[in-house]
Length: 226
Image (cartoon, rainbow, N blue to C red; front, top):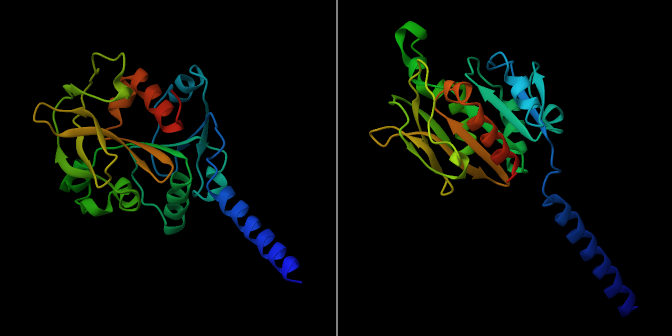
């Protein structure tokens, strides 16, 4: 009887360990990039640029939930202009924590300008996400990127720039690493991790629009690719 009891307890313990182990298995790799067009914007040629580099781009034009993120490798958010609901924030946080990638870009300084709505910086859509994932886009505008760093900038010696001025970005994560800084050493782009996921953050979507190679490097990093 004692042997049977021990065996039963052992089997239960093994089963629990297996279940717990499954919960920590990394997400399956995916080359699909989800473009959030419900809250943000995309530019002409973005999907084609991703496709030419081996990625499949799909548009997310409905409310974001776990089902819409399930098959993605990376969620891409650029220049968001509408707020996220609590359920959407829950889904995004869970997605990244479980190993999904997030590439997001937007300048927040104009959000606070009277001409553009005079809204509190705390209500900027990416900052609402950032409160969950420990990053922040400030209301302070920055200068032209002049200092480069991290593997994302490998092989890129010049950052092309049209008429844009990025916001400064910050984070509370120890993994936070600047990608680009301006001449006053303000960080305008950075990477970090959250849970098992990777995040790449830019203080303006124009940085990625004007620099396709940087866009692809960012997607690769967020997907965990070399």
